[in-house]
Image 1 (spheres, rainbow, N blue to C red):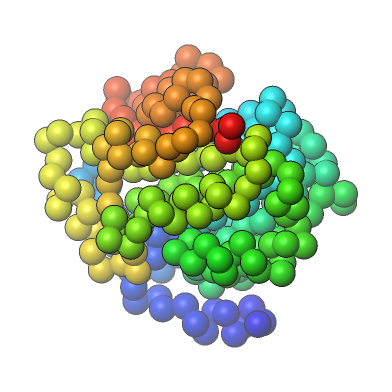
Image 2 (image 1 turned 30 degrees about the vertical axis):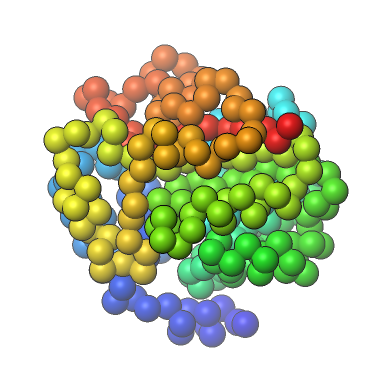
Length: 272
């Protein structure tokens, strides 16, 4: 489908997580409904913008670790969001120009910008498809995915900031298990997830209200609930921790200005 055709499918009156995230990162690919939801979130948690930036920084550090230290050269990035600086393929291909990356998102605007901006290295491969993580078979059997990813070799499954938009009723744990089952030993799961563990004074209803009218309501989870996604795989040190504490590059990266929190856990695990 052409870019114009994709743009006509975008419902600008309903906030979408990818566009809310884009606004909080200072991007321009968002609409009034997205900005309104984002500002409501900032009112509930004044450190939201800093938290989102910390979330993004965690992704960059974890992808660099995968490419530089774990030797991973294939990445399946599900729920990627609108392209911004420090995308998975940019980080991975800086380390290994032959790295291959597939981006998956269910928002047409991601495809529009992805196709325009996701130019990878000459030797690596980068592509973007429109699909929903709630349909693992659709993703795993997609011809574009199969063209880029060799599922007989280790793969990094990247689910950064996306699983908190999938409810327990939708079978979030079972969905992740299907992706985990599709990759061989030595594969990794990179995951980050919103939590309210650091904000006992904030109710779940208050925190999630800005997303109630979005295309995907939010479901914060506890440390134990997030750790469950890695079940059966070996956690990479330091385990599942607040994203700012996952291997910060310097002392300043391990904190949010003003002593706040990133409101998110992150971690890596490897398939035995």
